[in-house]
Image (cartoon, rainbow, N blue to C red; front, side, top):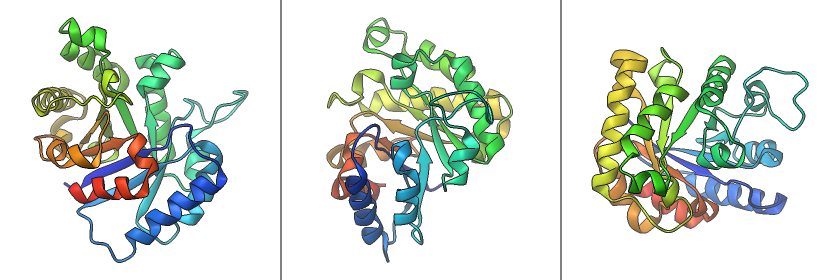
Length: 247
């Protein structure tokens, strides 16, 4: 399957930053022959702007979260249908920063994934252990709990992406070893068989956690690594493009 290289811009940049970054990526994409799909997930206020800036390119747009219901009295939240309406085709769900900063539970992430699927979006469901859990040798147990609790049973494999992001590696400059990544991704693939059935091999499993141009090729060459969810490096067009070329 084609790898997916997704950029999570998080809460960074202003209007001109978003326009400039999108423009730089579009310029690089013109006439390029990449062996992967590209996705960028800007902050909510700039989704429409970035969608317009990338119009005509093959770079997809995604949101960084969505609400579990279609509409209503949910001040400050965004419905999956709204994301779809402004041009999104993906949405990141259950990122560790949401789980930690907003106390999101597996059940809430699962409800959001169901809402995303209903709206026609592909959910990117994030899972990952903390450093404390890793040191206690609980990595696989945490991953199993999050995968089983966060992904709706029976989801269409082609419309689901899972991202393994060890919390201790996000924004720290530290990266899981290839052996660690292979072990966790293999476990995720095994767990997916019980959730989506025989189509489990079609689910793209991304690695995230301090992915950079100098480590991308090694990480992306590992078994069951079908792309990357890129944080800080996605804010630099040259670095993000170099990661995409590594796929």
